[in-house]
Image 1 (cartoon, rainbow, N blue to C red):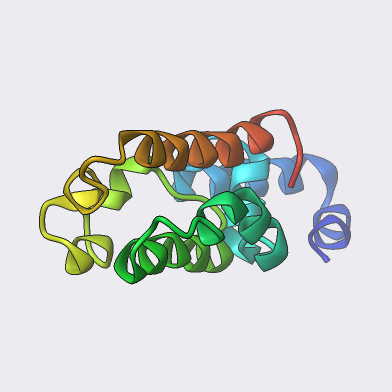
Image 2: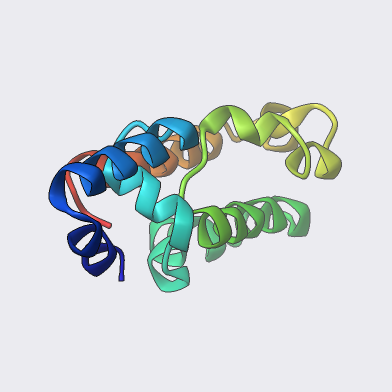
Length: 127
């Protein structure tokens, strides 16, 4: 794996290579870099948003929006909240999540908090 490769090329060169890769990826940390490479476990992503998936007050489009977040996290590992206002999310509703979840401010706030929780987990070292 990565650790073996870094050991084989030497500690100093390995650290320089890894630092260069992280810098080029614009990842803020090693955890973000790794998560971006391998994605997030689908079960973990679903658990982070489970309350929304089972919320019977949400419409099919709103549930699909949450499922798309899970898909993105599974594929890419991380995502900024600002991405919710861009494609493919904006394809569901041009007005973004605020309009899609109009009248349900607590839901959209919860979605942003869940995304922040995923990011915070990386900062504290949980992959």
